Length: 86
Image 1 (spheres, rainbow, N blue to C red):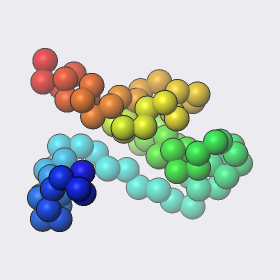
Image 2 (image 1 turned 120 degrees about the vertical axis):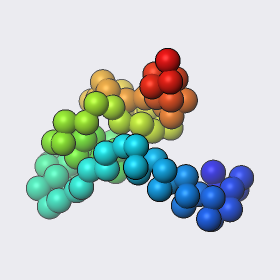
Image 3 (image 1 turned 30 degrees about the vertical axis):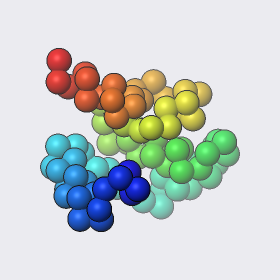
């Protein structure tokens, strides 16, 4: 997205998304839990465990394939938008 939009446009889009979606926090306990799992991708693990703790309905990411091993509620941005606009 950085190549297609100006910095200001990106920040405005992110502010719009932040008003529509829940943004979860990450604390020391989530980090320690993820370290113990030793999953392939640490950052994905942190996102998933934070979402699980906060009982979010769906994780929206362009990187769906890396979540397949441990998460069911993952959608691409396009799939998510399609599901809420129907």
